[in-house]
Length: 318
Image (cartoon, rainbow, N blue to C red; front, side):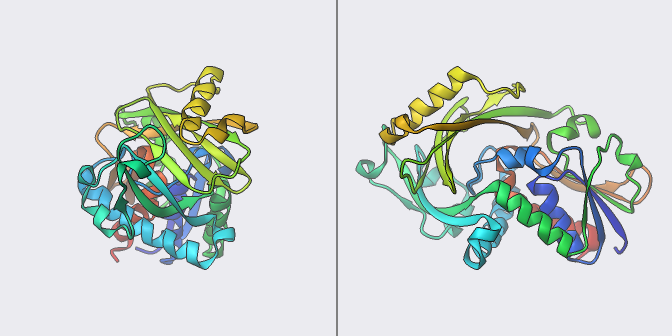
């Protein structure tokens, strides 16, 4: 299909989708209520790993397709793209609890208990893409514009009024009202940014069911500490008691973190959908084609390029 496409949403899912469409010859406009720096994606950690995302039968392929893109970006220009390959440990994680996709992750290995940091008895080591999201979002915008795409600060309140032959809904949590989709809900994540006391590896201990998680990600100029996964919580203000608890949990793994100077606090609302990611095409309400690509939960970065490829195939047939 030739012609114009409007992508609703300028997070990592929306931008990667727009890039794939623009690079296949469509005239693409991305419409977003918020500037890039205020999207949920801008707050993300962001480590490649399929976390809190369904459906499992599709997530593996999306994740691996994205992994290969991030590996290429890290090899080509980590400074410009914001993508680096960094070693680290997933504690309280065993290979048997993962999908078949884990077989395709180079270097993923089980650690002996005495090599797992902190008060944890099991863990997996890997060297994975770690993305500096403010840098990466700016790079994505540049790649979109180089392909002829346009980013517009404009809220979309009705998909029927988008006015293009192809409309792609990448609205994240906004799909709750826009579709509307009552299965969308927020899972609140709070982070603490501190001066890096010399940590050069990432660490996670994040259950899929607990509201408290422990992780730290070394990013340029800061160390990101987390976190929380509070279901149906939408308060955008950081909670001081929660921040103190995050620092304390991370310091149990790396004691030097307790003395690190706090640089700031962040809160993001993960766009979780009860039925899992919705990625499908249907006739548009005003004619044309409407494609939904939302509900990625805490793994939008992890599956962004794989989902974008699938959207492009639905739209162009190739």
